[in-house]
Image 1 (tube, helix red, strand yellow):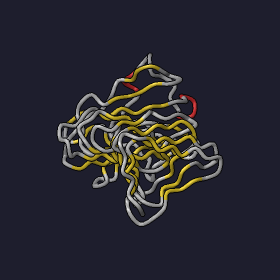
Image 2 (image 1 turned 30 degrees about the horizontal axis):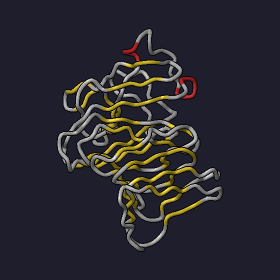
Image 3 (image 1 turned 90 degrees about the vertical axis):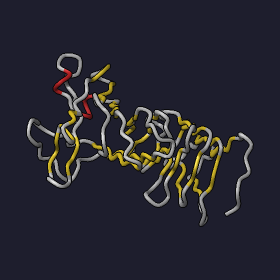
Image 4 (image 1 turned 45 degrees about the vertical axis):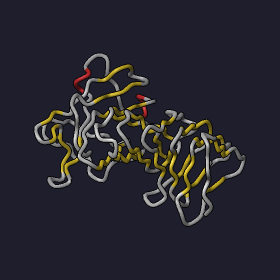
Length: 227
């Protein structure tokens, strides 16, 4: 429960056994590096803020809605890898473009945003390597992924373009990107109508895909409200 007084310093969690950050108050780091070779990595049992740079080298950083990792304004993060990512929610504050190094279990799957306009904007992202509770397609859709989905919530009504990443086309069920990119779409679940939809408030959130099909991205073609 002490306070770290840092001067652009780096704290590295580099153990070979599972590690955790515990206590009753938020811990603030400048640079935080995870290089833990255990099967689980580092677990947050309280909130952690990073104001410099998060570097994910090895091991998983486990968070939850209460014990969340927050990347502050102007802070950065490495994009992670299949060996190291944030398993659970991660929050970004500020007007920076940002790629959330998210994953779930052993599956690494990022989500990115273009820069918001308000410095106090907050976006919180999480990835799930499972089907959403409702996979019935809405109008204009043939099917919805039964493999994965992301949540992305914002504060300040400060809209951005969103990019979804895939690392394994076979696992994600993507069999056509370069040939017919319009077949791959970013869609949103409308809780009020209990359906997946291609547009939100009249804005088409279909994205063109790039790269792939083995590894690639799909991005919305306009700024978007909450997903």
